[in-house]
Length: 68
Image (cartoon, rainbow, N blue to C red; front, side, top):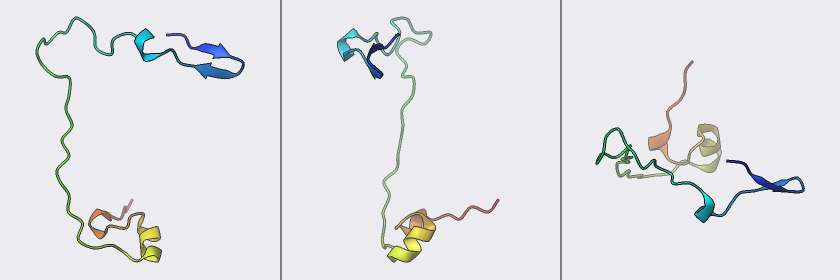
């Protein structure tokens, strides 16, 4: 698909002009291509601002230092 340009800024076509996201033919009819599952997460406390900046998150449950 080529982008139409006006000056130096590229203009994408309107959604109605774009082709279908999925092909009409599928090697596995009736099956989904993929589905995401994100389990519920509970955050019980937060880190102080200075420590959160060092850790990269305000939630201690998400902090996992990288050793490499």
